[in-house]
Image (cartoon, rainbow, N blue to C red; front, top):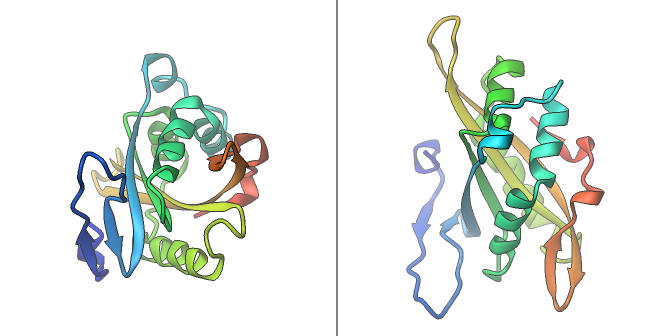
Length: 171
């Protein structure tokens, strides 16, 4: 999907001993994560998309995925694929307009370059989900740019869900 949007994509070979990012996109080190809810979260959608975005991103599972990405070192941004989650259902319920994935990824890459990782203490993330619109059966891709706050603890960076606010999330 990224390559189809005219980005230069290279896959990074991995070894068991060295933790590396998954892709290089336009010279940026990118980690790809898929988020799948367990049953207790998957069926419950919050009262608004904003609340759903925040609640999903501060859950332990999302933070664990993002913190795992941070361990890879030399990371520029994360792409978080939302699969079978309350957030995916919330996007389908509340967000009826397709967003421009290419624009969202460009915005995230620009932020990553302008705010060298580690100095701004914000992790740039692209969240995307897709669904079939139940009105006209159109395939919809929704994407969001998130600036997730970080803390530096025990000689490593970690996401800080306590500092994440809705104004850090853009369509």
